[in-house]
Amino acid sequence: MTPATRTSTIRRRIALAAGAVAVAAIDLSAKAWAENYLDAPIPLGPIDLRLAYNPGVAFSMGTGAPTWLIIAVTATITVVVAAVAWRAAAAPARLRLTALTLVLGGAAANLIDRARDGVVTDYLHSGWFPTFNLADTTIVTGAGLLVLAAARHRAPDTDVAPGPAPGAFETEPT
Image 1 (cartoon, rainbow, N blue to C red):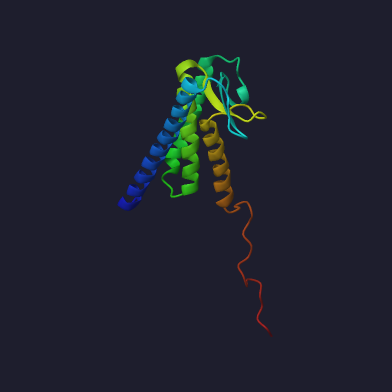
Image 2 (cartoon, one colour):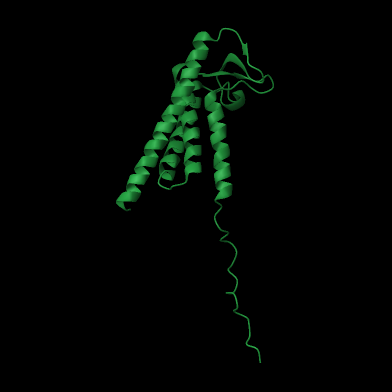
């Protein structure tokens, strides 16, 4: 690895970490605000601000599971995402790095929130969808960007045997 490549990788990893910390900090600040000041729902149009707590995971699945188990599983997933993001930062793929930054920041924020009292604080309510929070939106947005990045940068199909070289079967005119 050249010094320039090493420097670029370090910069991307710093950006990844800083971005994930910023996402987590913004979400945890919004959760703190919701817990301290959101006494009654605030209608804002398609999304209302309404305080709720989720003892389970996505869509309240696993609500009856022990808190320690949910924390252990989400911590493991968060560590795996962090490792994948750290390795991915070695390549200059901005869309993928942005996506992983959003997923990591959201996952870390929800993990930190759950570790405090066993539940995740939610505050965005649509009326037709389960109540969620900013970390959830960054995780979903990041996952969508990962799909987009994968679709844009598909590896060539290596299962197909290469055909003959162009002109291999051409004959000279007689």
